[in-house]
Length: 51
Image 1 (cartoon, rainbow, N blue to C red):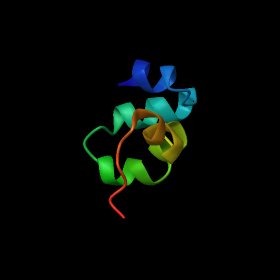
Image 2: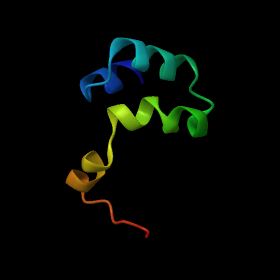
Image 3: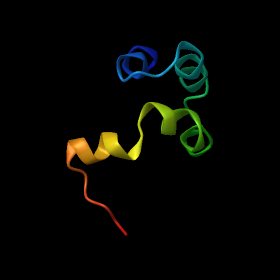
Image 4: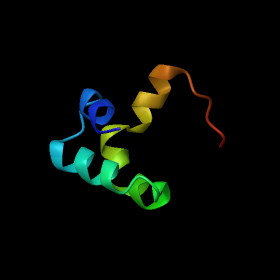
């Protein structure tokens, strides 16, 4: 998980903390994952919006 987040552009600190806390995705998603995987990332993947 650490390597993948670093490849996406996450900072070393954010990637390390998310990887260490990998069971609490809801808590991680608010700040750290949002910085590594912003909405534009999902738009590039073609993920449809639910709203």
